[in-house]
Image 1 (tube, rainbow, N blue to C red):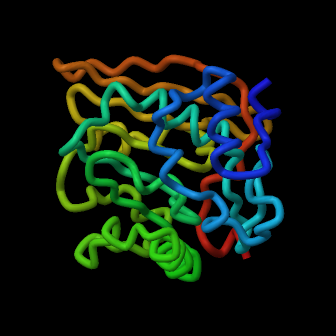
Image 2 (image 1 turned 135 degrees about the vertical axis):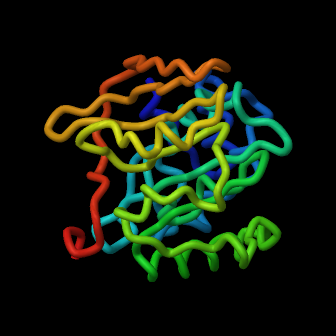
Length: 214
């Protein structure tokens, strides 16, 4: 089962997810050591979500893996990718240009330090470093459509402003719901037609503002 991919090392964790056919063996996740993105290092390679402070969590590795694999058809060198609720920064070092949005300033600073500690300082661009409130998600960051959008917390309803920011073609991977949540693909084809597809049941922390998390 996906949640049984726990390993003793990052390599073992990634290999277990590959054996479970969640990711491919050459996944970008093999190049990012999860120990640099968690608070409690002893549990870095457990396949479970972990608290990172301020009411936020880092998702279980298999959920990050699912997100990466489900968005992969839309990610290529030169792609524009938006990560909403980037938290620890774990999902940011992917192919293409990734812009992370995090409304907790302390998490923004921590995520930048995490990337540097993981030897990925090149992933940081001071021109696009953002510390934004959730309500600012409605603003088109850097004025571009995004080939892929990853949302790392559950929205009560589909944010139409994010749909508007999807490229044609493009895909959003997003958990939606309150008491009961599901992952959806929001696909926009080359003609701008939007399709919403239910993927799986999940449990995420809510997409919210800073006051609600403190």
